Length: 284
Length: 266
Image 1 (tube, rainbow over the protein chains, first blue to last red):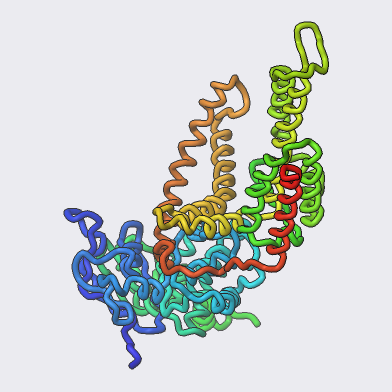
Image 2 (cartoon, each protein chain N blue to C red):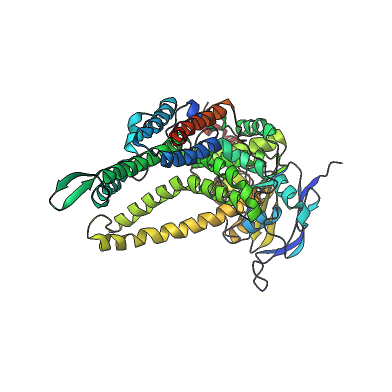
């Protein structure tokens, strides 16, 4: 049976301390298999906590979370869930364990007890998919931030997960590294059908997802396609977030009385709008 | 300047000694240290020197690296020699300088102790020069694993060592960054007496420790997310295998023991 619902939260609440204000409040969501979902939210909105709930690093105080039908609260599923829903963290320096890229990718495989002779093909494949094959023998501290994150992704891919959860994986990277990591994950989603939960505060990354969720004070404030979400500029701004630069530009044009579309997301779309609105300004 | 420290003193070339199983090398180093103490006559050190030279030759290490390894010990060596030379007693006096008598036994003792120290240090240098820290850790973990029955945390020790090796360059880089940041704000790490300099380290060490703890927390979370749950049920990427070279090495060591012990029986 192919289950369409991959990651499911059912009225999930999480408190760090029993009496504390919940960090995640009554969230219910269904993420289907193969979907690329971006989760947005300002600092302290609970998006990182939600990520850690999704692979059983935290257990819900109330409600239920299932990954491929496995309940995260059941201890016998813990390792299966973490293998099925791999997680990449924010700081590229603080998640690599070994002194050599190849050995680091093996770390997860060693932990889940993969036989030694099955490791090399899985490691090679993971390094190839992330474009890190030529760095296999390097020590991690000599890699760039983007490369370190791709090694972290390779370490998870080798475990053959069905979902990748990236908790602000590009926050500490330069634009080049950010693009490398995003493109790698987008390709894995497209070609390997891996479900992606992409937590970020970069609007242009969220604009490229299939679905955007916006969190605020631990609750789910908005949920829809990037086009739906970002055309509601005032609502997004009220949640202390920005809209992608091109959406912002479209709204500035509208404010000046130019009848641009409200749901422009990318530079290409904006170029098309400009061409439509002013065919004469368009040379070549 | 902090950046170009090397980890340990591993000398990366490919040689029959480099390829030996780390367990073999650790055990042989221990046996070599015992052998050094078995040499009861001065001429027997020739065999020890021969064994050492052979292993250095096979390991393609530059001889000067081995000789350089005793440099940090030079003061201790000189002291050992002088103390044994002047403060021993014996029966045959070799030399009399005023009230000081140098005995033949004292001279022999001095030579024995000094040579032992030299060979001890050189022998263990061969181990650390030909074995990368990670391989060494692997070897130690496997050798210590029988001790698990008495609750010795062999796997945890090895994991700690690996993580330390992984994070030393990261922390060195960070120390460098903090140092520059504090210097930019007027901190002075290079002048003043010892006390002043030690005090100047505080604004360096406090942020470094805080950050190291944060890193440790992050890393623990990341390791758990990658299914780490201790040594139980864990497989390994690098499986240690005893090969032909290892047997030859053990045989060579056995030969050294025979040569050293033979005079006692004859």
